[in-house]
Amino acid sequence: MKKIIIGLGNPGPRYVFTRHNVGFLTVDRFVELNKRYIDYKKISAKTFEGFETNEYVIVKPITYMNLSGQSLFELKKKYGEIEAQNIIVVYDDVELDLGKMRIRPKGSAGGHNGVKSIIGALNSDDFARIRIGVNKKPPYMDLADYVLSEFSKNELENIYKIIDPACEALEELLNEDVQNVMNKFNGKNFLDA
Image 1 (cartoon, rainbow, N blue to C red):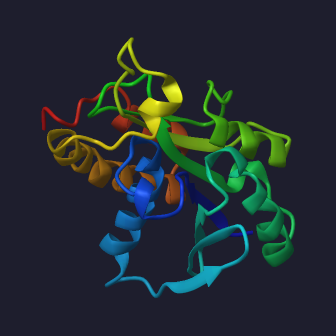
Image 2 (image 1 turned 90 degrees about the vertical axis):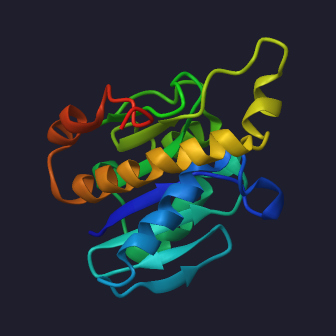
Image 3 (image 1 turned 60 degrees about the vertical axis):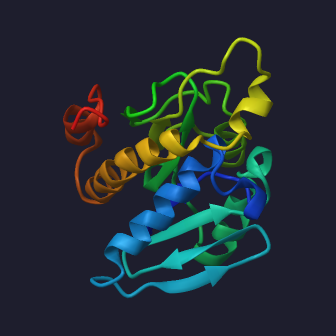
């Protein structure tokens, strides 16, 4: 079974540079960085779009965040049974400061509806994840409004400073033990680099 990388976000131009779309931005950058070395084949279905290689599949669910897990049903039709341990999910985290990421081998949804949907579709939380910090919401904002708000120009410049290391972590998760990758990337502030 191929590894499946799922970048979480919302489809459409209105959401491209919002906090909730860090997963989309990261997997897009991952493909961009590797295109000259890897032969990517475009794939799409009713619930996702993405790329396929001989070793892995990259998926961007296009069902909107809260229904991200629906993409797994079509992926199962195409690739057969999917084991949670073969999945890596990349998404935003409002509990982490901008410039930080946290890699985990498994865990709860932590209030993230996209991850909750994936856990529901898999009936398991036993999949690796890369959580990318987008800062805590200001007290005067509703959480939904915050994650759907666009990054400021300065924040966007800073988010791109962590996307490349997140792509490096993603590459390593495809080939290495998750504990080694956690030791290398967790706890660092990539804005200090």
